[in-house]
Image (cartoon, rainbow, N blue to C red; front, side, top):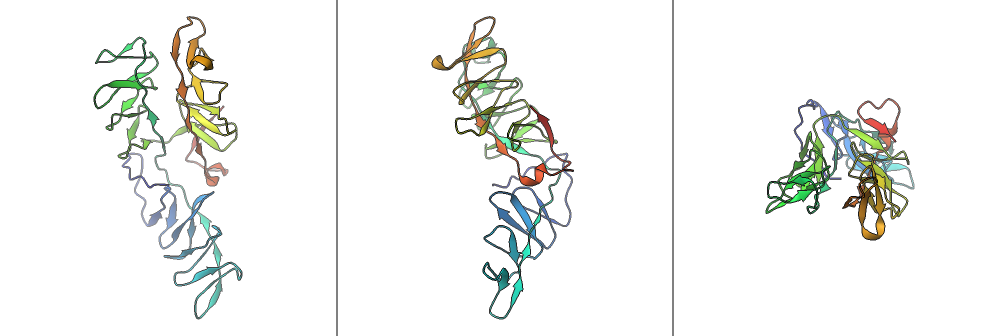
Length: 260
């Protein structure tokens, strides 16, 4: 996971702590150790050796020996120690950006006279306007992406950074989550993804979605309004974020979740 450097008014400076690449905090003098499944944990040794089992660690100057369940060098063998979960600070959380789509014929007229669906906003691109699938989207400097109101675009155009605690939508599997204002939809692989619309209709092809009050016309790749029969564009889904194990622990204070 890449490390974002973000300045947020809601974040207080953390003194005497080491920040792991995923934003977790280890005490001063400890070492961040990565685990593919559980994010980063803390080893109590400074400049420690993180063992391949992703559970234990050893002091600097030794190597992990799985057969001995210990740490060895040329002169000694000592027991290895288990890592501890990293603390999660009150930091901003980021989500994948929503890609802008080409303008479609509808009521929302952009400054260059192109049109976007009424429930979307005009995105100012580098050479022309496109449509952002958010009612009050913020155009990003790259001219290709947009973020919800109240967010900043990351400098590398990969994430939207919220300046306060994030309210998320927890999907039915209990571990996947989507940004507030989006809808969880199942994918063809049986996993979960995010439709960039609130209260959206998840289409039967498990690839696309439509806005509330419409039905999916998968054959023609259109969303049909239930009463007016007006045609609107379908939207592709974005990958959901999988929550780290520590985020599901009781007493976790920093994540506000809306359950479906």
